Image 1: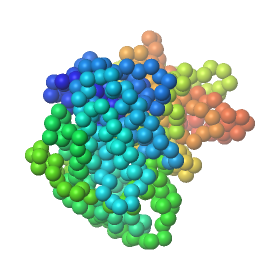
Image 2 (image 1 turned 120 degrees about the vertical axis):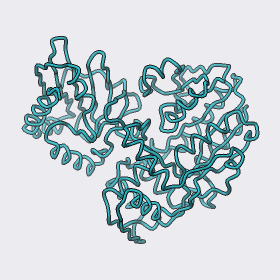
Image 3 (image 1 turned 90 degrees about the vertical axis):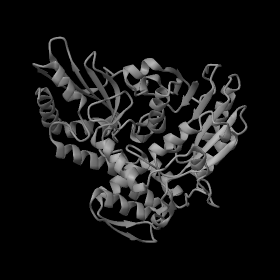
Image 4 (image 1 turned 180 degrees about the horizontal axis):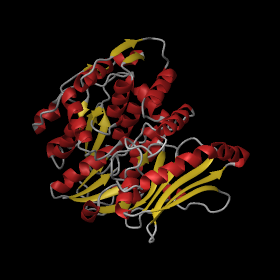
Length: 475
């Protein structure tokens, strides 16, 4: 069966792709930027990749005519506070238009549970997209999910940050809102189960796990699974804006996502029934089982995808290509070079940089810089990295974004997403003479940018010098 997978580089798409290939399907992945499709070489050979920006009506797009089924996994909640609903509607209409000239028989859309009498802007947008897709010339199957729990999901990472960092919490009253979380494994099973299943055509289904819990109960159960106790006190005085700032400063979420999440967390997200579960014969996992399964993946370094690798989790434009050419003029640089003995081991050190590994020197200074960046509205260091030793273009790496990661040419190029009075690049490369080069490039914006560079220059002397020496040690 030939399947069109939109949002292929997203959190759900990256989990669904290997399951589709495992079943022997021919998969056409749709992404905005082919270079950002984070799959290994063997997977890349098995799929077809096409670039489509569903928000750009002027682009020339082609979808293979012989598509049998399409998965619609496009969401824009993290990209904007004000107009994400307009973007989602525009993308859905364009998707319908592009599928008109294909043989597509079924479209499967992953939405959100919309049973509350008063919907948030986020959930209203999901419902509107559903209505638009029902106008397409295909059979539509809609799966409405609540909070998705799995390694790398935004919900799981937020709960993880809150519980691991705050044993005592003063929380907004929305933590008493009921929700029905579902394990990512179950979501994938449902998405696979409805594929070409005529009993699901032109119908919408709620999907959820067996537990209906308040957010407070979810925080307590997380602590129970992890083997510690937490204390949560609810106060009625936190406004939505204060709640958003609270989530932003404590967790790894971006402020845009925090605002939209808080807006949705005031609404009950509970499934009406388990009709689809009975139809497909799927046994769902409890919330505690979902948490345990997520940590098993984390401990084995098998996290396939993370919401934090989405470009909109940071500060840069969607088009990473515009940053990949490091400027040569009007810039300030710190250049370090050192001879090395074992280029492969040093390359492995470079590929492990950031996250739990840290930056090889002055870790406390990096943490202070991350804290200051968070206070200033940047991502800080809390995003970490998805995998301990794998890097793909587009990945988040603490407060950097990976522009280029090529082990063949022995080069890693990062672009700073921290709040700066200018633009910054950090490059590592090993030349043919077994010399490691570490180049920090800063393009200042006006006098303020230059003052910033020279004010931190003494720190650069110690940090960058110590960093390259430790990276060069083939351990």
